[in-house]
Amino acid sequence: MAWNSFELDTGGGKTCFMITLGDSLFIGTAKDDNGVVERIHELKRDKKTNEFKLKGGEIWGRRSKTPLFERIALQFKDIVSLLRLDKPIQEKAIAALIEIALDLSKAEEAFLDYVETEDAAVSQYHDPKGITPQKNALIYKNPTHTLKEIAEKVLIRIIIAYRKFPEVISIIRGETFNIGKTFVNNLAKLLPADHPDSKSFEYDNNWIKELYDIRGYIEHERWEILPFDVLQSEGDASCHVERCRVVIKSQGEKPINLAAYLNVTLYNMITFIEKMVALAIIDKMPYPTRIVTLPETERPKRNHYRYVADLVPEVKEKLPAN
Image 1: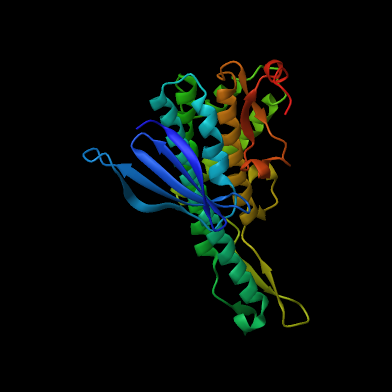
Image 2: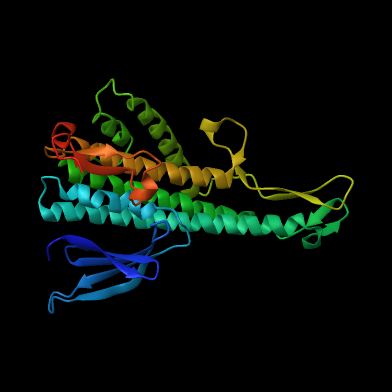
C-alpha cells in the first residue's frame, strides 16, 4: 500500500489521524483543545486478504498531556516525504521514529508513576497520623525502594530510545551512524565548525555520557540515591519530608531532587532527538523547500511542531499575496 496520511474530524472535540507505513496502519486520536495525541492503535495488513487487522490493541494510551508523539514523529512525517528517498526508505525512517516515541512515552508514564508515588508519600507523612512515633525514632513505610525501581525504569527506557536513534540518522543520511562515544561528535560534524549551535553538542555529549554511566551502575546494582526521609520538626508534632535525591557529577557535590533529574533528562532526550533529526534533514531538502523553526508562541497553534517545511525566501516572495 502506498504511504499516505490524512486527518479526519470525528466531532466530539477530537480529531482522528491515520498514517499508513508499508503493512502498518496507525490510527490515533487527539483532543481539539490542545491537539496532543491521546491514543494510537496499530493495524497490520493481512497479506492473504490485503485487509488491515488490529495488531494487539492500543499501543499508545497516556496520562501525560505533553506533545511527545507530535515532536518525535508527526512533525517529521511530511518533511521526510519531501526528501529524495524511495518511499520504503521514507517509511522506514518514520516507523523508527514512531518506535522511539513509544519508548519515550513508556519512560514518561513511568515518570508519572514516580511523581504520584512520591507525592502520595509526602502527603501521607506530612500528617503525623501517618507515622508511629517511638522514642528516638519515627516508624513509617519507606517508599525509597519502590521509587528507586521506578526511577531505574525511566532511565533505562530513555537509554533504549537513544540506542535506536542512530538508525534514523543513518536512514536519512544514507551513511552509517553507530551508537557509542563518537555518535554525538559525528552528528556535530554535520554543522560548520563555526556554527553557534556547535557548542551545544559538548553539553549533549556530557549529559548523555552521565546517563550511560548511571545505566552501568544500575545494571551492576551499584546506583545509589539518597533515600526518602521523614524528620520530626522540633517543638511540635509536625514532620518534615525529604524527597529522594541523587548526586550528579555535572551538578556538583550537592544532591539534587531525583524527580527533577528524571524530568530534565527525559526533556533533554526528546529535545536532542528532535533537533538532531532536523539537523540530519536540513541539507537534504530539495529546492525550493527548506526547514524553518517556528517561534515558541506559534507551536501550540501548529500541532506543537518545532519544525515545518517551507519555501525558500526567493521563491516565496514571488508568490501572490493572499
